[in-house]
Length: 184
Figure 1 (cartoon, rainbow, N blue to C red):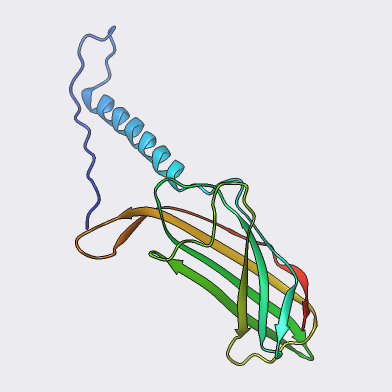
Figure 2: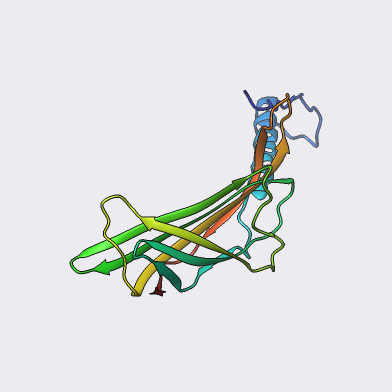
């Protein structure tokens, strides 16, 4: 599907205080100003919010293979209706001469409500479970390194007899890699 086409109609302006610029030059200038305004409007709709934060806490370890990490997300409100949410974690831990790595995540989309309240102040705490990646060894109690990220999307219902949504706004954030303690 092709997006909307924006055209600028240019006409020749004569007798403007002796200005001798050609109508083609004025048309190019008007087009450049219009394009700049359109780009500013588009970038304002997709910019990340300043208050988006992601932090992780110490995790729990079950059976040396299941890590559960609390992830705290603060996100700003976006225009439009909620569409989907994604929160992911990666855990790494030294295990002898190897490094064990686990990944896990949560993806929720309509009709299930979001686990995030994006109002710029609510600290949304979500526990994300991660299991070892293929070829990775088990984990043990002690120090580990964790990073987390989230996305939150809004949009509108497309319709047409399906539960189809068009995402129009998105925000997200990523935590730095943090040293945490796994307890099991």
